[in-house]
Image (tube, rainbow, N blue to C red; front, side, top):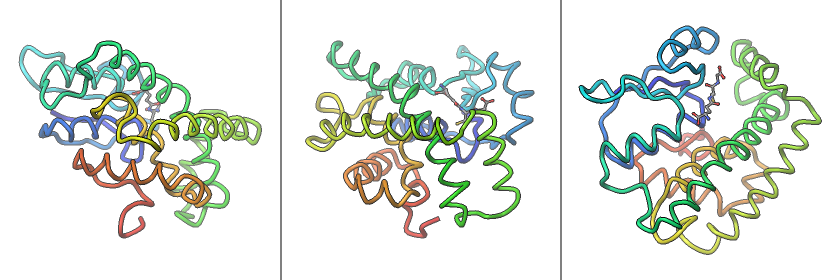
Length: 227
Ligand SMILES: N[C@@H](CCC(=O)N[C@@H](CS)C(=O)NCC(=O)O)C(=O)O
């Protein structure tokens, strides 16, 4: 299988966590932001990564969107399961996964790119990196007012997650689910922001644990080399 990705995308990390959890061999191809759309649009009709190319007979040629990749991987290789045995709990896990994708994942993007352009500029002050950050800020309309709202949304969301993850190992039920993988990936960029590290230590403990379960390299900020 081949995963088309941006190396720094938290949605691509989400797909890699699932591939790792399922212990599926795959390769990655890092696309260049800007020209990625020319490659992706004919494959999926979308311009976003991740896109998984199964490269298998009798399987779809391309799967776009991290949630669709979860569904494909579960059907392709049911063990170890990513879906919960109880239907009601699985529905709850999907609801959290969708909320993380559509709300907290995008709020994280706003807060993260705002940090990288301001107080976190020292992480990579190179012209090329700062240019990418500015392009992303413009593409998503990341400005002061929007960042404030995103930070407030994250605060409320993290309180919801604390009530679950703070008390027990998994967000829903007794097993790892799509909700845990989504949270571990989509909140991982916050690991580079000192204020979040200070305020939510339990969050980063869980993110590390889930990456270890999935055999995925830790995100920047949580690696030993601190990169
Ligand atoms: N809902 C999508 C979101 C993916 C997404 O937002 N990907 C971003 C990178 S983090 C992207 O490809 N942006 C480029 C674009 O929109 O053209 C998923 O879960 O796969």
